Length: 498
Ligand code: AHR
Figure 1 (tube, rainbow, N blue to C red):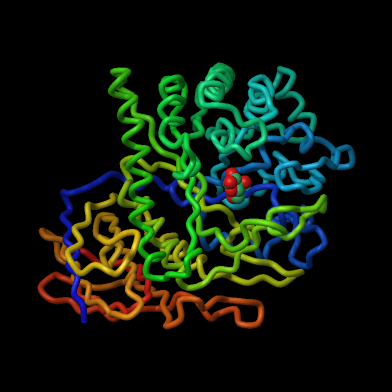
Figure 2 (figure 1 turned 120 degrees about the vertical axis):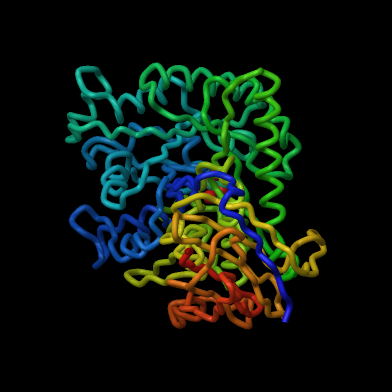
């Protein structure tokens, strides 16, 4: 059996893990809102139309920051269409996904759902067709106390208390040529700065996310970030990055090494922010908002992205398998390893659209990628530790230095949370965890996701083919833990620390 040493030390810390890295994303796209979380016709719906089989399952994931309402959708969205009496709300064409948007779910419904789900709302304003003034009006509508036009409009809609939304994105993927209203970086920077200044004048407590590069393969990668940041550094708090990965080449070994690309993308953007900070001699360090990430490659073109004018068409309905779950775990591990720079992250998305849950009529199935997120849900408070991984590498064409074990660790007083992926498709691994000056005495809980077939997936007929199971194959010797991990596995465990 291959051996890997995981060396940790309580004093070698990275930063406190920001709970907002366990965020989600709900876009008006396909069946995410309609039929996903909002489904008045469903037997699972309450009197508000909220669909509780889905929402109860999502509760298990304990999402924090919830990004809304898009995505590409937001770049053509008029927030006013989604507020006020439902019967007066217009059905509009959504150009981003070529769908019909009935606007029966909008800002206030989202806020009611967020409150019931304990989500931290993270709104994106329209900087495609929208103006800085419209964005600032929306902010006043949401956060104003009353006595002024937009705040009074909210009150007239039945919401006396301000929603108090603190986190706002200045547009979505404005560097992408497909984005409605896409402009060069210089022009976006001017729009973003004008909007940021109006918004901060309206509510000085808001935190703002600047659009950074949304894909490493765009020709503007990094130049966009530098230009936008140089212009807006003083006006924003975070810069975004997005990443979707896939196994187009059907090469599982290579796909399972993709964590290295995720690390690299985070570090490159962090370097860009540090460069601008240094150049401007600023004390302020803009941190990262990884506000779209996931595996997405099968349902990414043709009928999967074209709603053909329909209401709630099935779009981006990716079916996830075991190897995808192991990749999702690597995204989360990477966020923990970069706890000093990544402060917000949102899996895209939460239901039906590239999501951990799929619905069909009143039925629901939990997909493989649900389980790694759930592993972190109860093991995420604390300080990220530097992780020394000493062990064999795996064969990967793109990432030849990928270690067999991908790892992250969080120390929370007398508990140590560890997360490991065994990337090998054939080799088991004995993982030795050593916390140096402190002793590991027992495993209070452990879970594993594993299987022999990387392509195994859950379906309505076989809903539990891939799932997490209790795992306690751990031996303790002299304060060190020895864990035996099968090939193709993801482990999450809580160790008791003396
Ligand atoms: O999450 C799906 C889409 O991916 C989003 O709408 C867009 O921002 C990204 O390209």
